[in-house]
Image (cartoon, rainbow, N blue to C red; front, side):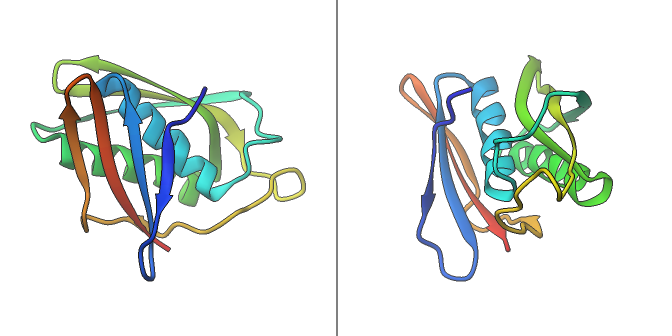
Length: 138
C-alpha cells in the first residue's frame, strides 16, 4: 500500500499529516503510517489479522479511537501490522489489520509511541481529498 503521510516538526512529540482520496483510505493510511513509525515494514508478514470496530459522530474523535485501539494491540498484545483495511458502515468503521506478533529478532523497532494525543488532531475533507493531522506522544 502506498502511504501518503509526512512527518511534521513538533517539539517533544511526533507529528504527521496523512492524506487520502477517501475517508476510509484516510483511516487506513493513518493506521499504516503509525505502524511504520514504530516498526520497519521489511520483515512484517501478513500471517494474522486483527479486527475491531469503532464508532463516533465526530471524525476527529473516531481517528483518535481507531489509532488508540491499534496502538493498544501493539503495546499489549505485541501485534504489528503491515497493512490495514477500513470499511465504512455508516458512522462505524470496521478495521482489519494484517500482520503478526512483534519479534525483536526479525523486526526492527524504529521508535516508541506512548499514545495518540488530542493536540492538533484533525480530520477534514478538502475538495476531493481527505487530510488528517496527528500528534503522537513519544
